Length: 88
Ligand code: SF4
Ligand code: SF4
Image (tube, rainbow, N blue to C red; front, side):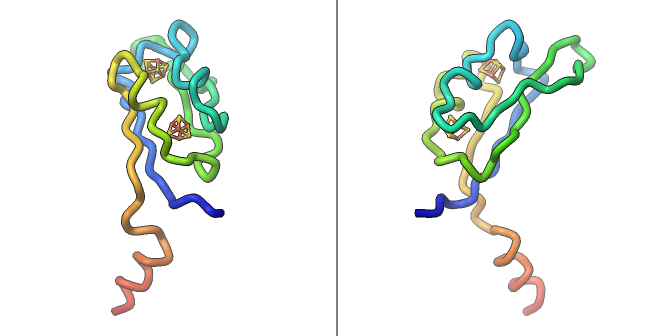
């Protein structure tokens, strides 16, 4: 069954870095995250969303992130729906 589209927001100002923490990568059952290659201005490499379509909205990353840096929510207005609304 197809999962509903989600939006994953990562607050890089709150994240302590996937190198030092990495809980979201370790606890995601669908391997949605990878570590970003780039460094932020604070010198950390945050997680980046690699496979958003695999996300089941289980909430693990959001619940267990010690810095509350991740928010996962359902995309209430997927692109196709948004286009239909725009055409009305
Ligand atoms: S909500 Fe679950 S499946 Fe989605 S990115 Fe977070 S841990 Fe992975
Ligand atoms: S669990 Fe939170 S603090 Fe740790 S790497 Fe992921 S987003 Fe950053």
